[in-house]
Length: 140
Image (cartoon, rainbow, N blue to C red):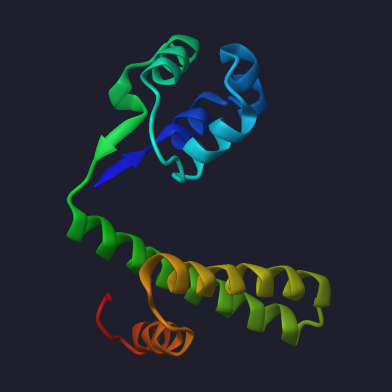
């Protein structure tokens, strides 16, 4: 699987998408698609402009990962994030921190949508997997 790691590189280098768009002349939407790994194709011209602006190599922006490792690692991370967020949500609700709890509920909803849309995992199956990890289940 090909992974676009531009967002990670920009974060490490403290570049914003708007800064890269200005430096390269590439539309901000295109930069956003690259950062969100939603690019349908990769323009070699754009790749060259980005490498020049960030003073990096192509391999700093694009990586190849083994498919099974990628899927397993990503879904395992997603389960762990949901589990941790759910634990904090319960703490905030008990403490009466409604604004913080509402914010965390948005994150949890996003984790469920990611599981459904990117991995084809139903909400019910997702939460069963999260719960099984809590009680010492397998990693995914």
